[in-house]
Amino acid sequence: MRAPLPETKWSVGSIRITSRTVRAEEISVRLGIVSDEQFERGSLMSPRNPDSHRRESSVWIRRSGLGSGNRLEEHVAALVRLVDGCREELTRLSADCDLELYLGFGSENGQGGCVLPARLLAEVGGLGLDIVLDLYPPTPEAGVVGG
Image (cartoon, rainbow, N blue to C red; front, side, top):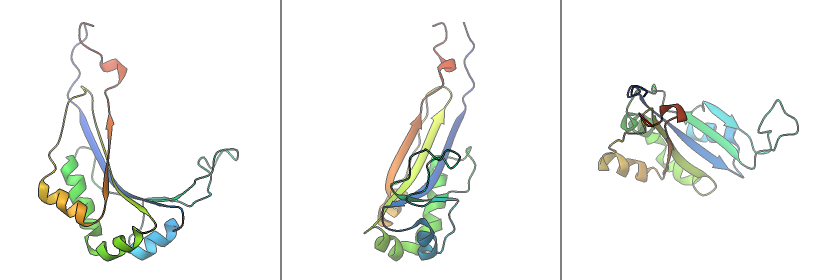
């Protein structure tokens, strides 16, 4: 019988904008925000492998800047503050881009949750961001005690 694993939870958040027509570099210029990562349409998925697939869309990513120990709500609030002054440009970009609030959550024991207040969700909706929630189950080593 294994001892229960400690309750370790983590969360991350970023804004991800993808487009088949707007270059990632242009997204940075139009928003006035530097990306943390960006990839242009047609670039190799794996730059070290010349035979890898090429990207079908440009990708622009900006992380919340918070640590993984922060609550999911804090990541969302930080990202909303980051782009709050860009509402009009986000609306213009939405004609040619997919705008996503990309959130990740995981815990060692498979348990956990969060509350995203209605006020915060209304702000996300007002920015035109779709929410993508990426959940990570516990690793196989975390199995059931006594199993």
